[in-house]
Length: 324
Length: 294
Ligand SMILES: Nc1ncnc2c1ncn2[C@@H]1O[C@H](COP(=O)(O)OP(=O)(O)O)[C@@H](O)[C@H]1O
Ligand SMILES: [Mg+2]
Image (cartoon, rainbow over all chains, first blue to last red; front, top):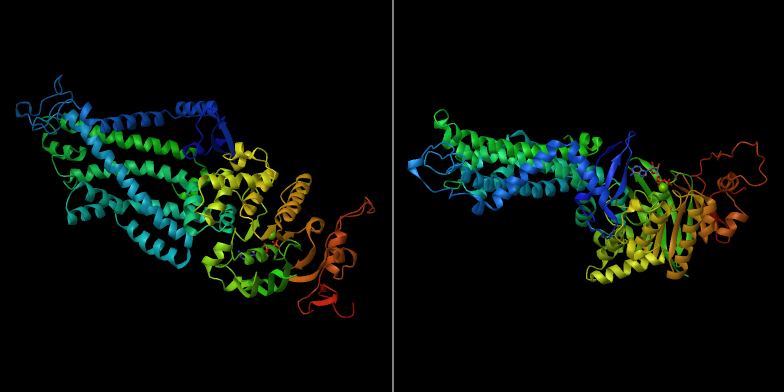
């Protein structure tokens, strides 16, 4: 028997007066799944157990929490202005004044990392949100209507996008439209939506055959309503997993583009741009390289840990059919 | 009395296979027609054809007239507005016909919101709770936000029935509504349907493979096999003077007190190529597909 899902993510009833905490779906050894209700206390126990057996997920959550807080409260947390140039302290080693040292213009690396988290997470969340909306729409249409439309969308459009490396698409898009936050987000979404579209299409194809969809149709629900109210809530679990892993990809892609100078133009601090600036000081001031690299690494790892842990809850059969 | 639903020479096929052949049926307002037949005889596809839920998969010829309009030639938006409002369906599997991740109150409310988007939240909720009362679900207000898995099979079937009647439809199509339930619960659901039919003046198409079940709720009974209508008559006539050999086999298939304990279970051992025999009115209102010599 294994826990396979977590209804608590959506529509959970978290209030104490009701004994309902949430429900989870459980897959037994025969592969049958059923739903079980957990009350509030069981829910806490369940979560604690999961965190204990999934230390990496706990670590990932802590890291992302830290990055999120740092990004959200950057102006209050960062010890100094991330753009304040202080030439006398250029390339300063870590000290009480500059906790992680200063870069070649004497700017405080710690402050720049904090503001970099703000940019990375903004970009990552926006890219995942855009990709999710676009992918869900296109994948949903393909899965729901099937036939020729599905053929065109799936075979022609999706496969065409999949055959091009996303980062190349993004690079050419930014090179064409010029750098900037919005262009960066759009550029990364252009390559990002396909994965979600494929996932949504596969899931919709499976769910739309279930009897409750027919029942909803027999109630007179329109296609749009059936998709959003009846099918989508049944496929959010794999979408959440894909999104968590997509966040990692987006952070890395943002860093890559910034490293290539195609990110948000200076002086906005970005981890990728910091790495680029530090290239020539790899040997004389390695802390310029190490700290932004660690930031990128921890952020990407954290999202991957969370995504993996979430994926482990999913029904193994779903995992296979989704191809995760 | 005028027929509320009239199926006229309906033929349905899925690509090459014909699943319903030249079917004509009529249901008079406020009566129940029971449709019986072994599994695979085309009962469900007939039900789905009436609500046009098979549009993209099956080819259909013939006419289905509901309250004067031909459903098969109705545009899909007009058809959608009839579904769940005028013509409602109850499905066979209460386990799978409910959305596992939506509270049951919300699912019943869907039927109202789809057809009356202008209604306030409170009005919708009141209508849902009233429907839950009507199908005798215990504690409607408290259980409004519960999920399907928190109910028993019989209660889930009541939820499905509540979804069907919440808009006060004129025609209710129940496709094997009791097949998945055990016998005691089955009787309760049949009583509920009979009660709702009286209270709301429903016209009903009741589908089952079980002639005994059908006889409990139906005014008229139609017997189908392999897409062919074999016999159609009032309930009394079907039981007293069954004309078709298949109907008689169905009636005889259930063991009675007189059946010797050691006799093998009766099986429907019936063969016959009936498509060439026309359906004829053998007695007043009693149609059967039997050769003239019988
Ligand atoms: N979507 C479909 N595609 C192809 N054949 C179908 C489909 N639905 C039903 N059939 C076929 O139609 C026949 C009648 O099925 P059905 O109406 O479900 O029988 P029942 O009387 O048991 O409800 C069966 O032979 C079945 O295989
Ligand atoms: Mg059936």
